[in-house]
Amino acid sequence: MTESTENQFETGTVVYDPVSDTVGEYQGPAGPYALLRPLGGGREWEARPESLRPATPGERLSAAVRVANSRSFQGTPEPLSPAPVRDCAACADLAALRDDARARHDGSAETDADVLLRRHQRRYHAALLGLAQYALVPDVSAGAEYETSCTECRAGSGARQRPADVEEWQHAHTRDTGHARYRRTVADYAVLAAR
Image (cartoon, rainbow, N blue to C red; front, side, top):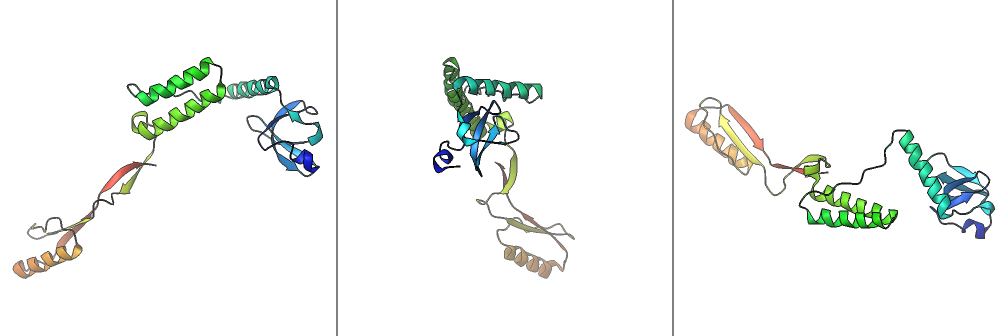
């Protein structure tokens, strides 16, 4: 492949291969050939670079329709557009942008609005919509608490900030009562955080 042919298309350019009568996405050079991938994914193929040309809008549309029909036939539905959350001004604005793009038949702007609306909903409405998974993480703003209680008389130290304070209470209690068996607990704080 010559330098000029090699640099003819950028990776991701949608091109038409007349030999296979197929529209594909240019992936880059593969030895003397150009490597193409079908729109919507699938097995890549090699094509003669000199025969490739940018796909026309009609060829691109036809290929996109075939992909959509194939997904529909295979039971893989197209992702639905997210519905705005009631009483959320940001959701309403993004949905309005999407509706405006849809009315202009601007698929790219419609998809962009959907992406922004999903991102907003994951960030601000995740719990409401059941979109986020949560993890229990330590709350670093609150330290651990240490406590002990005598198993013989049920007397307790109460919550203390340091283990040494609990041990000091145990020593004093044993000295005063002769009791020697204690139940010790350590408690910390945690919060549910979206992953």
